[in-house]
Length: 143
Image 1: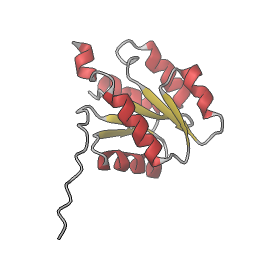
Image 2 (image 1 turned 135 degrees about the vertical axis):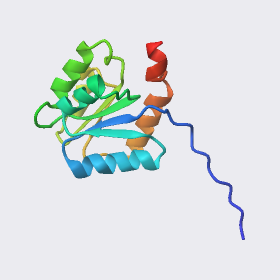
Image 3 (image 1 turned 30 degrees about the horizontal axis):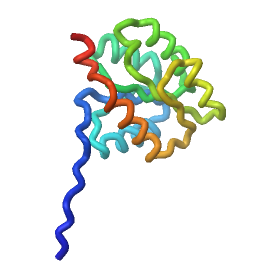
Image 4 (image 1 turned 180 degrees about the vertical axis):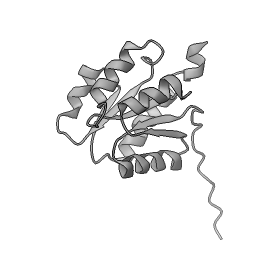
């Protein structure tokens, strides 16, 4: 019998990652992937629901994963509201969309990264680790 040492996962932030996606299956799949990798998650079905969680629901995420094309309030509108709110503007955002040219959103929306759907799991986890590891926690930023 071989004794293989367990690979230690890096410590993950205590704050959740907010996944904003209108397609329930996609949202739940992204959340399951992140949870499998050790992250806490919270989901919202559109930008308005996400803003409600951020402003009134006590959610203080370390990162937001944001779909651009959603009903009620799309990712573009959400990002405009988020950037205008000093309490929320410092939370990093990764956007994703099925539309080609999503990379242009990095500059126009001032986000940390953009991905095209279907999202590559390894690339997503790499970006999430990079952008949650290098910033202070949201709680520490408030102090």
